[in-house]
Length: 106
Image 1: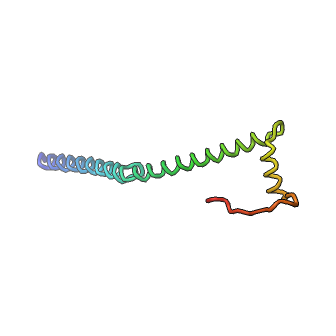
Image 2: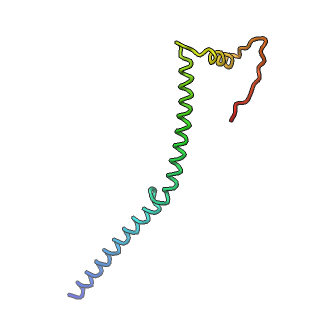
Image 3: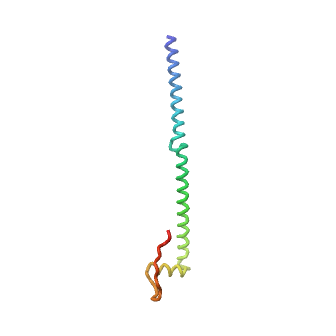
């Protein structure tokens, strides 16, 4: 019986080592190719740069809109802006003026 018990001990020890090795290989694979692994790092950096660029564009657009709102404040309206908006939106022009439509720059 001692031979069977020793053999069972060796088999269970080998199974434990195999299980530990399998877990370590799984963790290593996830560290390399998982969603937060080394291979995904470059994609995450690229995505971060794109989002930061988009944030900068949105901030610039917000600043332009904020400037427009300040210039259209009812307490002190910018007369040039009011005239420009009125002519553009209401198609108002003097009889002696020529209207030249231009495409906005892209």
